[in-house]
Length: 280
Length: 280
Image: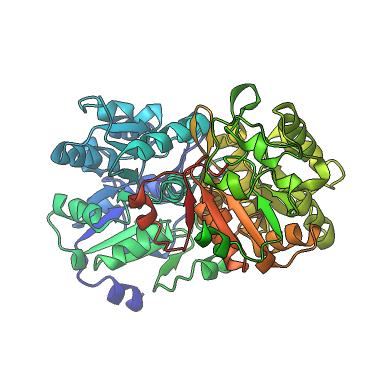
């Protein structure tokens, strides 16, 4: 307990990943991860909590605590409105204004740089791009497009890039995979790598682990990196990215977490991570 | 002319790429590249040849010359039988036994190592795997699957790999793209990179630029590397791969060749290449 208090000394806020930490997406909208609704809630903790774990004792009901909370997600299949609506239906205390997500951040970049995107995205997030000029594309934006990652659509994105003198590829996150209720699912990262390789270019990543993305989430709650802890299930996007920004980080053992250390060794990563079997 | 003769001194055989050199694939089977049928043929050169270029003068009618010829392709959408049938219909003097292709080479490896593949391939090449045990897969084989590179199929291949303790991914070639009559098309390489990244593994490549593949093609015509020249349109798979094996190489300016040096610089490659606007 003392060790935990020491590790978290001076923390004034929490950045919370959503998918794999609060809920697993999937058929019918997905399912809340046990204990997570209570963990975020403003209301007092239920006296009987089957999933009550050590961390519940000192990080109970985030929104009832003095800690500032920001939801920091790479979700790019849904608009913020759709995502927040879904989480609210699952019982979470969350509003659209509390969410930092890559699609709105991308739109800001597109406008600032006069970029007109060819979109390879999921229909669920298309509404975020409603006021973006998409005529005569001079860049490609990809997100977790799910079934829209057909060969035809990938080839079209490739051809657009190959026709540009200075090809710009923006990727909403670079996750390797995520967990749905039905199992592990390929995320946008692999498709980003495919286009990078085929076109001989390097993508610009908007979303975790981009430092700019973490900084914008911290800015939204008025904190410095050393005052915040990132809680996520992705060793690269959440934990590694946050640590590179000077934040502390906790990796949950829900979501895409796998105890396959062999895979981690292959990724050649060695990060000081705090694991919790189940955080909440 | 003297410089050419010097560069090609001691050459006793030619490895010829097929797609982009002899023909461009596409709707209706594709189209022969101008001059290529004559260049391979045993019969004398037509006295009137609109595409007659410098190299015709000293590499006329390969099969009429004393040079040994082997067709060395990464074609993985078609079985050798289908490919040779198509080329014969286009007028080429070619037989199945003259072709080194990745699918048969992969089958040999699968048998030698007791590997049972989950296949993510084009239906056109499936017959090459007819006598391979595919029960309870312990590896994944990908090839240029074209429209079969759906999200669902990619995700299934990903899941098979993630379920294996020692995931083995075999890729038939690692081309970035190729040219069809309708334009540039994504090749298997990008999809290989996607699975490598998502699973944190490295694929084994069967086909060009793998040295084993070139060596098997050379072995088939009984030549050493220094006695042969590779002719292809791919700077990495054909030219770079052959040079690494000790062969000489010519890059044609047909097929996927692009004069976009910017892209090459991005690929950070600097190889001593001989370009021909049109080889034949």
